Length: 309
Length: 81
Image (cartoon, rainbow over all chains, first blue to last red; front, top):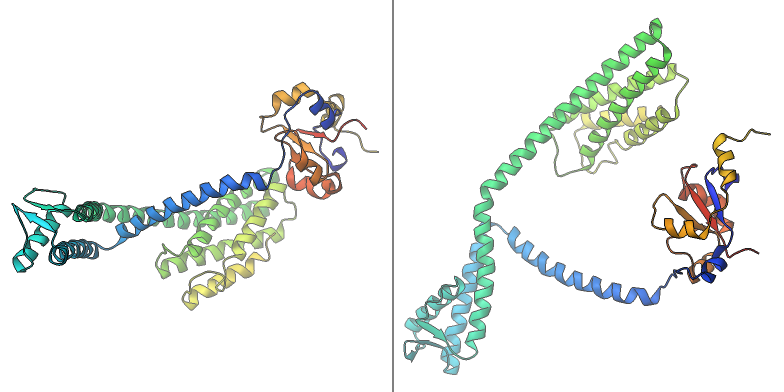
């Protein structure tokens, strides 16, 4: 190991033999035996996940559709109660008599269905026999869906608020990127001037340059993320001004670098990151199609990235 | 001949580690225990929490596993042979 440059290496001379001899625990890599329980746990989780995801899907339905679905279920179950009463002779019992297979009976069945789905349960109409199971099933389903409807109603205002907050933070982020790009650009100009006049120590200039480069890397990352995340996107003209600023900074950075020969290790790392990120900004690699003006800027950025690092 | 660094010199004095120390530091994330046996031997039995880095691959893989040269590394094999 020392031959490879490691300077903090030690040796356990006894090795495995000594370890086992003095009763040390031994770990083994077991493949077949360990995998079995793992898989069953995973299957279990998958089962739970599909349950949860079905509920999630339901909750994601629009409000109108949810209410429609809920009403549909109630009417469907009402029909079932009624048909059961007609076909099999045992059905819903209102008072002391079974409901009749006519329109009046159908009305009672629908009424019972509503009372069950809303978990009111007056008890003036009662299910008999197997209809009890059906009634309980309807009660559970009705409650779940109705819960979704209620939560939708309650969260309407909240969703609007969250969206607003998202929008504001996003705008702020864009603003920050714009300001920082401007700062980096003007700072690069100042550094270049100081360098030419030789009015400061090269050491200080290098430090200042490095910190500017670091800020630039952060903002470049943000823009890179913006281009690759398709769910939130600024307006195209805002994006264009950002890209133009970025291209400007990148060009001045590469110009500055050509006049500079000495680079510290950290700076070199930073520059490589910049080059990689900027290389990812090209009209063909980003997942969305943009206006030609934007594409032009992107291609310019990519072109410049090759000169850095 | 290159002069050894002070740190390198230091490591020369404490090259050997005892069983007790290994046992007490097994859970320490800063303590890297490397088994240099071939993969099959490693799988058949090794000290818990150790990493397998076969001697044959050590030159090519060491830098990948331990990018920091000052990392505290303890190496062991089958035993005194």
